[in-house]
Image 1 (cartoon, helix red, strand yellow):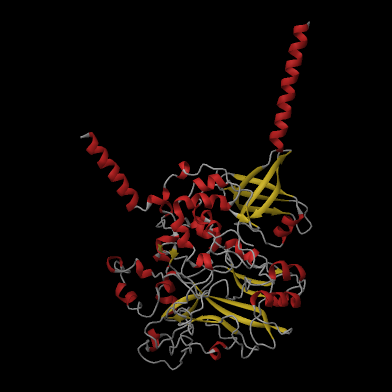
Image 2 (cartoon, rainbow over the protein chains, first blue to last red):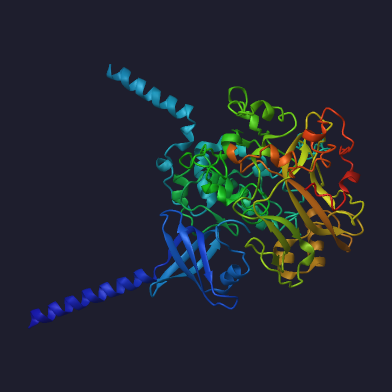
Length: 108
Length: 497
């Protein structure tokens, strides 16, 4: 009986560890620098947009969801456009890469 | 025998390293061992071996933001005052001197080769302020934001990665002149970082059919003095010409069917005129900036996909794949300098214009970006005003206050009354050199071709039809008198297009 309880406890502990670690992993901030290849925004009143960045290091395309008003304004009035190089920090939430920082690398 | 072989091997390696200029590509991992909290911490490490290089860079215009005029600006040939970005005006952000303590430098200084020139009083003798990484770091996402090292930067990785500057290093500042990508220079923008041969035969990588040259391949350097002159500035550290490479055995048009005809142009037409058929080829460049609309809350549609109105900055015009404006140029410029009087503000002020004419044998026809501005001038003192844009107008939209604060920083008094004046600048084009198959052909300029405004250039018409090359004095004399501000009051409609 003791043995069975121990096994259950160990399994539970392992499961908790895995779950807790996986949460940390998904909430971890990821930094990248890349060039915008596509911006998708639905109209002037949109509260969200997506920007596809080509990672300078890996060359992979990463789709970033942008929700902050300042960056959305920059998309809307074309202060940030396709071809701009961006420093981006994002976290993965529910499978989406949500932007926390989205700034052009150059210019003022 | 073994010893001889080793000596030979070491000697060969050293020779290879020195002859290829590879010394700068030495693996720095063994030298960069500390923990670095700031840029100057890294510089202190660099100085242990490279103190001379710091001394050298501190003599350059990249550091001082000024230098001797060397006859570049007419009327200033014998000037003992040094000029440059630090004390000149333009039609973009206009000045770095705005603010009682020149606070505008906090914005503009992000492209200074030092940490961090954010106001008056920066110590230009402090070697630890030299930013080695901005030009030499190849990795570590090196960057500066708001006068801090970017929190994306891995300083140690950046420091270990130092090597000869690449297009990316130089482009970090020079592609964003005027405050953003492709704004000031029609021939320099971020698309050159991944250029293919059709965009620039020199900068495109060899895998893309180009020459794979870095900036310093043409802008040769000596003791950190970098050659190359701009029509925007008064100083330079040596000139760059196409003939530096394309002469003698490498002279142009040797294998061309029409080589003789093409070479007959070389006395009067610069290489750039035919080989830069369009500028801003992949990304629109700013072609106008009207500061008079600041605070007017206009709603204007974007041009070429880029913002055309900013309530704090004014109205912008953009153009892509633009045909240059062609002008005679003998290598010197007439340029408005801070404090110069404006005789007639109802006419546009020619901010900078190449000097030359059909009658001068030292001048050739060059391509330029035609840029118009509208900016404040002092109504009473009759000169262009210095104003505080950063941490000033851009936040307050208050012209009076920003002009008063601009006067404090620049030492150029403000009378209390201002108005706006139109300006015109001709900005040189030397990059985005197209492959020969895309260069201009005879019909682009002659026999009905519309590229050249022959009359404005001093010809009676297309010289192929009318004759009258530069050896015959033309009926229209466009000679511009040096240092005479009368010449800069031109007809607004005369755009040489």
